Amino acid sequence: MGPFLSLLAFYLLFTSLWCFSVLHFIWFVVSMNSSPTLLSAQGGRHSQGMRHWIVWKHLRDYFPTKLVKSAELAPNGNYLLVAHHHGTTSIRTFCNFCTESTGFSRLFPGLRPWTTFYKPPETGFYPVPPRLGQAVVVLVRGEHEALHAIPGEHCLTLWNRKGFVRLALRHSVPLVPVYSFGENEAFTVKPPAPDSWQHLFQTTFKKLMYFSPCILWGRCVFSAQSRGLVPLARLITTVVGRPIPVPQCPQPTEEQVDHYHVFYMKALEQLFEE
Image (cartoon, rainbow, N blue to C red; front, side):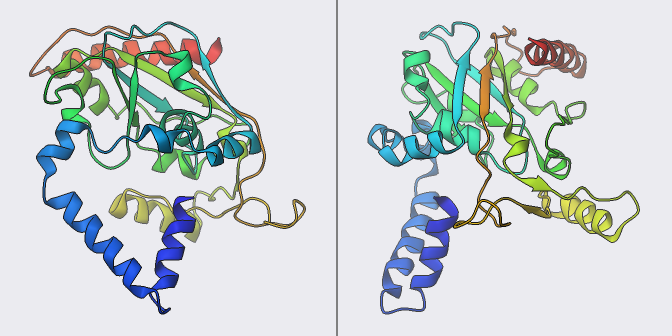
């Protein structure tokens, strides 16, 4: 949906309807820069009507995608949901937390999910006025995982990624591991050979842009037997783990961060094995 609308806006620039694309761009720039405090306090824009669009159910049924709860999350608390496996896309994050197609509100009544893609959710737990029942979803950097998103394999890079633990400690927000099984099956990725030009280009681009350009393919729009950029219809199961309570440390030390980071990785491994 997102790439399609972006291409549509670009296409309209070269038609008699170009003014719509220009107006949309102006609105986007103004809304993102005119009142950042208001947007931060609200946690962004949240539309229940849009979350229930019927098109999201068709997207869910295409793969299909399902959301599994392994523990209760109290509606009177705030949570930091740390989503893995990133893969080449974030299909499961969008379906499960940006829409109601998999029944998030039914599984976790009283919680309001917020998905962050670009900025750290520092203000997500301190809205104005203060409120509870917020579930902020973060996607731990996935540029390395995207290069190794091979069907049937699970590769995570977590050892040097501790920002989400530091964030949870600052606000005393429980960490909730979230793992998606099957997302690597949505596309076929050509893994780079260690000494190839592809590996050199991708690793250099990743260091400069924090993004990994992948050689990948799925299926064609009109034929499942032909290659294309449409994701393959593969089951994606997202499991939400048990919350990990953490103390409040306004200025957490490296020892505290390392301690809870190791604790989190063990909980994630346990969730994966279960």
